[in-house]
Length: 208
Image: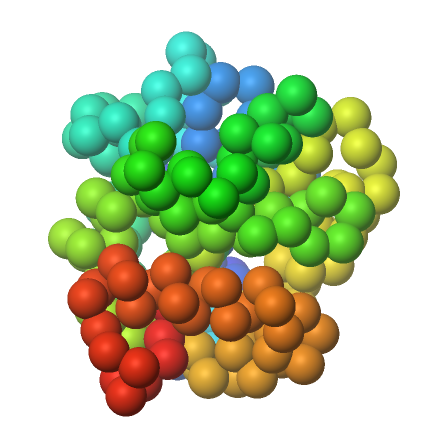
């Protein structure tokens, strides 16, 4: 990979490993809140970063819908297959009225995925859709979703800072160490959610 390389569906910044893939503007009008974060991001100090600032701005189709990644999200799958990223990040946005629905403890029973964890300024942290997580990534890959609260300037500013920090992480363990220090409760929840997702025991390596 060269310093800056442009593909039909993604742009690559930097070169070498680890390889990261960050995606925004996945559906509906989310691009209005998220795409510019990746349009303005700079290359990591080590390794490479592939970005897809805009996947689709048509009708909203949830990434939890099995048809998403075989339809409007197919560019993401193609990028994953070509790049085999070690770190995969999705940037979404949500309306304030959906905050409770996204963070309620019963979300796993209701929609089949764990509740998001709440960070500063109502930025939410969670995993990606089970479909892409299970089918396209090994267990030791780091796959995360960040949700920005629409209309909340502080939420977007803080999310932008997080995303710029994420591009510098070189491993899953480095991310976990940082999270356990800054957000111990949320980090422990993310580890537990991961173990439950893969049916791992407490003795297994704590990965997301």
